[in-house]
Length: 140
Image (cartoon, rainbow, N blue to C red; front, top):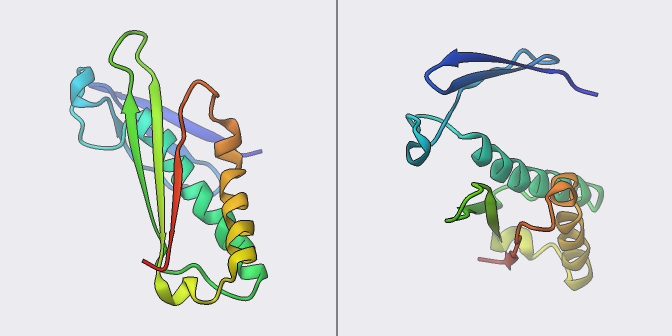
């Protein structure tokens, strides 16, 4: 269990605080939804949570295999619905694993790490109504 406290600062800005660490940041409503767009929106955090969760659990699995996924890049493209109700329609995920890291992973290890990414806690929590195509690029 983790407690997160959120203060609404006005102007469609919120400040979440992670109780265990004390870390804080700001969220804003996006410009296309009456906000300032000066920080992550709540739906941006869903996309961010997916990408960071995938690479984190993959990193844990890689560490158990004796190597690090350092330098891996994750790109998540969030696509919102065009028609009401406003919601996330699609989260496109692309993971690019550098050549020097990819060289340490045989086909079986790559498949195992990809499965770990596909089954991270955030991915398993995302509604089936959201499309989530995932591409792994090994050695690029």
